[in-house]
Image 1 (cartoon, protein in one colour):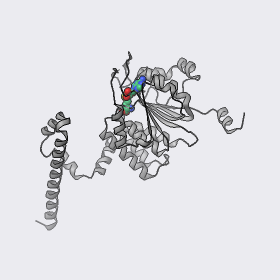
Image 2 (tube, rainbow, N blue to C red; image 1 turned 45 degrees about the horizontal axis):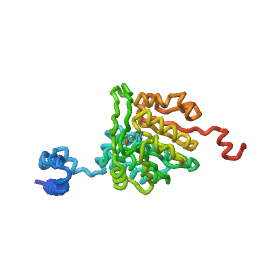
Image 3 (tube, rainbow, N blue to C red; image 1 turned 90 degrees about the vertical axis):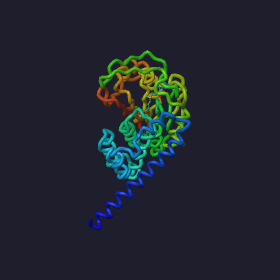
Length: 322
Ligand SMILES: C[S@@+](CC[C@H](N)C(=O)[O-])C[C@H]1O[C@@H](n2cnc3c(N)ncnc32)[C@H](O)[C@@H]1O
């Protein structure tokens, strides 16, 4: 056997036994940790074949960074991430963009999330593009387990803003909303208590994976908490599922939104939420203006709009007219 082939074989055998040892050590550690708290996880552990599947074995040879990039290529999220990575309009350095993408991906693997990474990334891109003249904090309305919160806290840190996280931390409130058929053809019914994420659990996730020092948590139903909210808002990310909750968020956040600021809703696939966004009477009577031009309305799950600056208002602020 040629010498190089012998060396390659030795390397392969050594690598295989090292990864087997590491895997069994990890499994032993996990089972000790899970003994008291997660019996079902333990039994799932036991069901696994001793050395994993062939795919798992191949994966153990591939560096994690390569796996991440393969995944980005494969998923729908990848397209958005690649355009973010190679685009320069965020004002971030390549290293910052790379770290952000890596951290988003890591959070998605660690925390149960109800969004796509590309959705938070689309919001992040708009936040990074906001000029410093658009002052105010970022608001997340509806956070579930805090996966999106952790990601948004990183965005807030990079854009030097505070992140205000509003949620009942009790899940969806009582409601009678039946959204019928969603944009994707399925039904949507949200029961009281769905998507509950306990405040301490959310804080823990943000502490572990995000930047908790830029976060402020506002606990309670939007109907009770947003009424007292007075801070200027640069950008808001609403993911509340219910039309009534979305309406409340718009009613109290729109007046606080700085001119040039943006509001995103992740519920553009829900017919009753679409009705709120299009509801001329609501916009006129509650907010004193017509409905804004919503990007993606009726086409996408993630929809967004900007508070436009009128020429009059801009001139008044600049002191050109009284
Ligand atoms: C679908 S989950 C949010 C998912 C999260 N954005 C994510 O991507 O992981 C909806 C959240 O909205 C919150 N929510 C809905 N209506 C609310 C209301 N009226 N007041 C407070 N929280 C509300 C629920 O508690 C829940 O955490």
